[in-house]
Length: 238
Image (cartoon, rainbow, N blue to C red; front, side):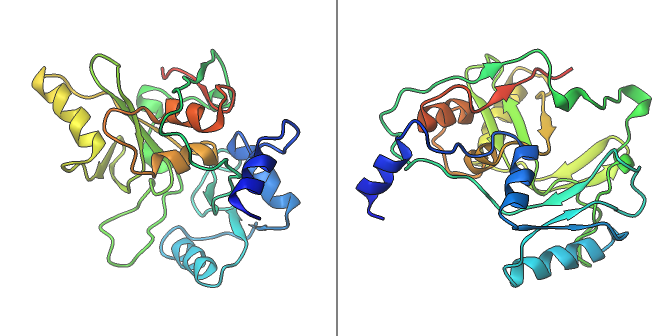
């Protein structure tokens, strides 16, 4: 299919939209027979990492690990899935940024823990490699930060290791966008507010991993790329 034909196809109003949330993503993989669910108990210490690594090496279907050793039944799952995102060509250099929808409720609020209720061991964090310094709960989640004046909201992906019940350890180095924003908070003598989300829409993960220019907000970039503000919804943190 030529670039012109592809552009024409993707511009059709009746084309199938990509999954707009992670649950839809899983269902799309099931529909395409491109996912394997594993209900056997899997040890997060090295075993989960080895299984995922083998799946990547052999170009196997995506994995859904339903029974992580030590995890509370039905509350948390580890999901290591390949990208699935049918996106329009990246012709957004001159497109108008479109902000996302801000909503008041969502499935992300189904399980909430506050204060002493929260501790990172509730997550089945895998010890992926023998030489790692600890368990890495964060490998595919998305980090959120914003400048003090809220003019720049940044998404990014980077590994983060469990340090204790309520702290993670990870890299924040120059010239990363998260470092630039942290420096602005440092100048005014305040800690930088930070959030981490798991199971975000594949289109969001793709944007978070792209080398977008300084000062560009990824959510607005997605709006420009898709021509719609309806592909992403935001819910304020508590």
